[in-house]
Image 1 (spheres, one colour):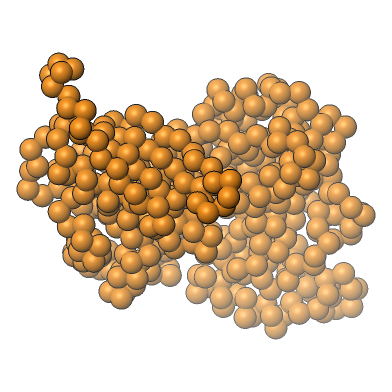
Image 2 (tube, rainbow over the protein chains, first blue to last red):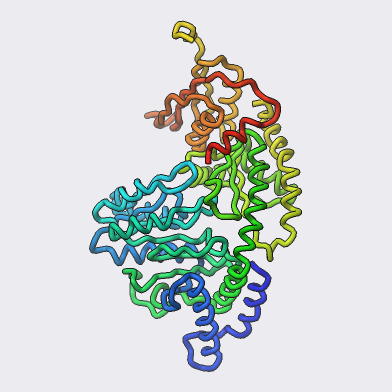
Length: 374
Length: 110
């Protein structure tokens, strides 16, 4: 979390503790703070304040977005379409609905190319099937950084009268906010805000309806009251991240460019994701003959925190569905996500040291497996 | 090379069932390193990552993936399900010192 967002959170816990539904002075103050947070985020997302709801986390917002579009379209059908690299909140919900109905065709997963970009002709084919009520396409993939062609995807969806749900969790705060969507979901953590705050944007033009009994909370899009201080901290983080976004992106791109070159030099490596049309702060690569868990541990020992999509690092022993869908190497996978400048001001030095130590770390884990000479 | 030069005894089986990633790929790479071009290597693997990683290895190392099949669990449940791959070893460029190959392939993959 950004330091300024943390300060806002602490201060707002003092000022905004009361129930914003209440009419006494403290309640009115809480309401004013919540409205302020909503206005700031609505402005940033290019929608009006009543079109924004706060939910408990990005995945919850995303799932609510999906369920509301599905419910609103129930007289036309129940089929949903998503790219095969969507967030698991989408994929597990879609598969669950199809399994519940005992009808696999109710959830279609659209293939991506080796860079992780959705195949637009396959998307069009999938949404042309009668009974389709929504399509889900992310703004960019958080695991490999590739941006999705949202403008074209939205154009196709419009032509077929299908609403487009956009998961912007990976890109908000790093890239400009998406302009092409019918429902959008985001998570405050992606722009340096606190955990536990998702945003759901449902423009008035979109036919969206929450299943279940009517709710008075958050314009009827959830039944969980937001924590005012958390929403305010998210808005403060948004303000700061937007002010520095362009500089931040340039700095991140330069660093990722150096890391990418260093990774490509390691040999027997699959540097994954689109080389150019990508988020500025993410780099992912997979190394042949490397145990991902061993490499993460080795780098951690040297003071570097990296992610991995390798099967051995997951509790299910299945590799990342994103890497699998792209057809790239899944073992020996490393994911670097650069923190924001305000969180890691000495990042450049850490990156220098990382680049210097990476070849050694990789050689060490390959040697452990007797794979130095393959 | 004509057909008569392909020696039918150049068949290797790598049984990597029960091994977790990246060991099936390492066993395959070891077999391929010591094999003549044209050798058919049959790999058996039960690790779910092998489904993705053996084709990726073939692409990255320029070997031919000829066939993949799912072998279901045996009827008496003594043998769990696994995957069977058939890989044909292609001639490899002389190995340069360092890591030139990887970077060239990595940039192509994007």
